[in-house]
Amino acid sequence: MNNNAMTPVITIDGPTASGKGTIATQVAQKLGWQILDSGALYRLTALVVTRQEINEDDMAAVAQAARQLDVRFVDGCCLLASEDVTQALRAEEIGLLASKIAAYPAVRDALLARQRDFRQGAGLIADGRDMGTVVFPDAPLKIFLVADVQSRAQRRYKQLIDKGVSANLSDLLADLQARDLRDSSRAVAPLKAAPDAYTIDSSALSIDDTVAQVLQYWANLQN
Ligand code: DC
Image (cartoon, rainbow, N blue to C red; front, side, top):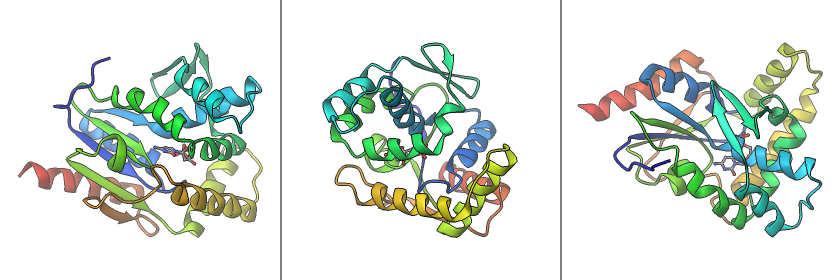
């Protein structure tokens, strides 16, 4: 793949369950752009570590797994060596392990070029934690999407119940708080807004309103 610096990028960073994935998907559809779900790459690494029983405390071994990921994204599905692992990636324990190994500098390094390779075609919506600060610092539009932790826990709870998965709201809240703390306090590429990012608080905004706000920022840049 060729990384094309001419391809515009909109970065959407923010904490777990802030709605980044949904907003990124809808903005990408409206603009006809590609999407990078960078969290999926960390989750995939966590899945491989679990399945291959790699020692999760061994940074070099985990980074090797990240470098060797055989992954393709096809029609919103994530294929690991041709197996559809889209659902498996969403498991809470995979998210927690992803958050742990995402703090390893060697893992972040192993995934950097792979993420930049998504920059091609008409445009890219890049969803993650460090898209605007580290991976695409020259992106013309950067969004930092936040929502209070209670709203995020409620959303995650509803998603799981709708899928028929049993869930406990106070456990979800505790998980989110643990992940927020780890993602924002790690030494390398912590979750934080780029200085030139627009912060949108979606706690009280609908999905449509949030998408409209991002598209408005983009339209403003074109004038
Ligand atoms: O967005 P997500 O919940 O799928 O991400 C899973 C974990 O991966 C998250 O807890 C932190 C990490 N992550 C990261 O460190 N940097 C990114 N750009 C994306 C995700």
